[in-house]
Image 1 (cartoon, rainbow, N blue to C red):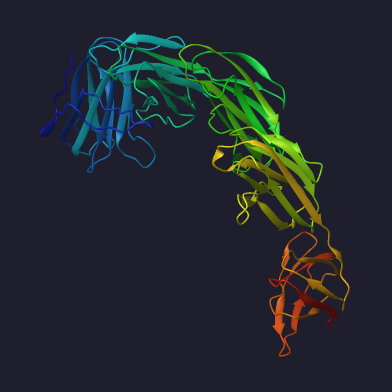
Image 2: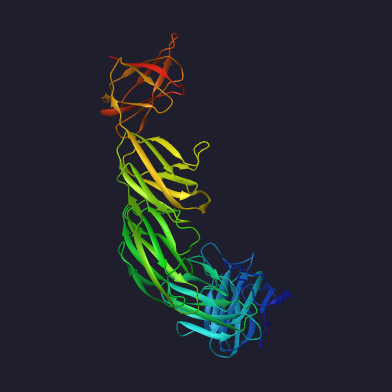
Length: 534
């Protein structure tokens, strides 16, 4: 039996509704309950307002009191006046009062509303909800839906113990509910919905009781799981295997260094598991992700391919959605192949992406190309920090891409090879050519073309102010200067009436500076002269 009755306050208005909209769960699960009542009442200053109710075992009472005229407080009392729960403010800055309690004994109870300051009073609204939430005492609970209604269950959760909350035989939604304050549970962490159910990982900062809704959607039976997450450590290129129970999430942790390009993979097969690879604890303690997702094998949810931006500890969550235990194998592998030769031929499986790595010195010109007669090949070129500096598919009318780039940062570079549209595969060849800079000779004349820039190493000292006199047969010559760390050096250009360009330079560090001279012309005669300004 469910009854609400105002005994003490002067009644301003009462409205009882069959359905009051509440907040929505992360995947659309409504927390509204048909047994909800809203009353707008007036509290006489210095008095209390009592609302009687009758409850049966495991009824959960959620009461919220709002007022624009005073700071309300609310208590849940038994019939003898013993206080079972009380609250003044929901949270800092929110003066509404809210309590939630599960009643273990059938009987009469009452909600008592007062002003936090005894003399306060005025109009207030109390919204009271009730649902029956028997506790689950083990890792799972299976039951029937009663009277075609949604089911609620209460769970005792432990402090700092991440656990999977999963539902089966219900709607394809991520479950949600209320915590011990009556606040909706954050169900976004590792949330995943699947056929007839869904799950998320819950972690609490305190020991508390929470209340989970199992939505009804035409099915007779349901199962609710609450299973703590398991943690394991793993090394690169070492495969582990076992049996993964329903709703059991295993998190594998491993150390990785900046520049590692890894693949985390679970099997067998391409489907049936869900995995998520992410940062756990970075060495620099910053809040950045530390990890860059990369293209992996197409049409599979059983793997992650990632680039490590920052050294530290990382983790991969492994879980599946089948109702019974599932055998699995898991591995974290170093996925980038070393590219030692200038030309290399390989085989690309259909739908796959392959990665290659090699060392590059500062101040050289890199030409890279990829060719295949069997599929539309494409590549991405990545810097040592993971930034993509080229994403190439076709080169003009050719489906074989090429790219030329000046290397201004030494370190390990990466090349991703894939098929445009992810629909092809087969034999391919990748090639790279490195052009080294030559020594700068003041006053020397040379030819440049639009095929590639000329590279010169120009010795300079910090604070040694000088200029370069540039004479050329065409006016479209472009000059750039880079310091020994690869940073672009600002150059001021003055053009004389004769067409000669004067490039004013003030070096900020000692060492060889890289000078690039480029043109759009098919051929251009150039002369460069260095003049020190004293």
